[in-house]
Length: 543
Image 1 (cartoon, rainbow, N blue to C red):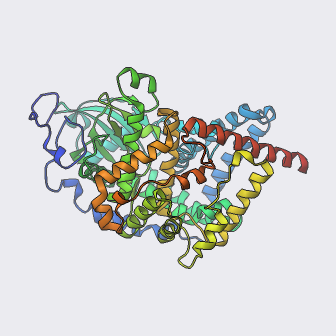
Image 2: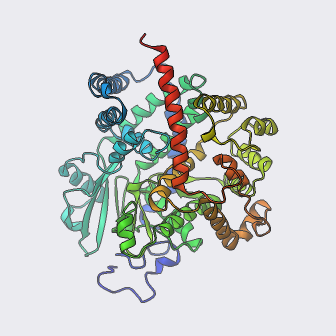
Image 3: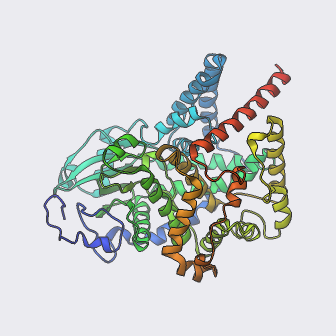
């Protein structure tokens, strides 16, 4: 049913009772199973069941792909070494980042997806690398339109002109797995068509095999790599990217997230409607939504939209999905969301979705609630239950090693003291068998993006007050379920910011802190660590 035709009832589309969709869409999703949903759950199970074999370490690596990737990256590094490296600083990092981005695009979907992950890691990776790799979100060179036409016609079983009255040959966006084209259906509805790239399956499989071969070699050799749990990271990457290859799974993800948002009464997020019938393994037709880029703060304000409210809605829906419903968008980045004229956030691209089973969700809920209450023993116990430390770990000893009852201001330490503190924490975590479990990796990745979103949308927001406000939302909307789920009544508990203060290294004298102030503190710490690194490099000298 076309919204443009004005044929919808005054109450809006009937599917709004079940999903967090737009108030007036180009079509409605009827009740009951859709044709493309047949066997989706079994398909997801089969896809995940194939992961252990895919990530099992072969005796020998895939030599051809190894050689291709190593030579491409090596040549880029060599050219940088002989040119911009000599200038040092920002210019050197920017040149290296550009060369790596070009190489990653050339190597194909798996490396482009890695670049997208890096682009969400501002604060972990150099700004120049993050800024350059942001182009891999939606500016990857597209495939020729002839290949797009061939895929669409093969999947839909009809000539393009029979399904669409118009189909833009130039794509709206092009990324690792697919590219997106604007179109109008033969029945008049404006849509976007997501089309999978050709021959992507084989490339992804070879790249995952290569990653699985090298991942175990990193364990025990690099402390940070060991903590990140490279084999589990490869397993998660394999699980997510293989699910991205089948758009029927993505369309179901859209419905699952939209259903949870609607059940929560969320009004902040809009999920585009997948078409009731035009969804296949390699083609996904969905509702077209238009709006402002999430970084376009100036035009948001001009339109009467409060960027802080945009941020708050995104935050609450993210936490709500993980804590209450066990499913959340797993790939937040600037290319996947924009702001509608009404101020709601359109959230796109559901190829990667975080899913927790009941035990994981309950442990995660305990983690968040005990963190807000500053209950250190219960907080560490929840981390243990999530698999971040082994069941036999001594939590009291771990708390001492991490100095969770102390406030250490990193801005007051020397560079050498900072390095010593970091090394102590890493050694303590590794000694207790700490690993980042795979089902938390997507959550942490999203937190990195949200941190950057705060800097963009509301850099002067009082972070302490915002934590209290969000906690109040969960008290108001989810107290009964939280009490049923974990036996804790949030109505009888107040937020204790002492743990947050200690984690940020902020003393009790400071009653508020903004992201801008927090970033200034981070910059001080980074500068101290860089100076230590520069001195160590100078002392080592040429070899």
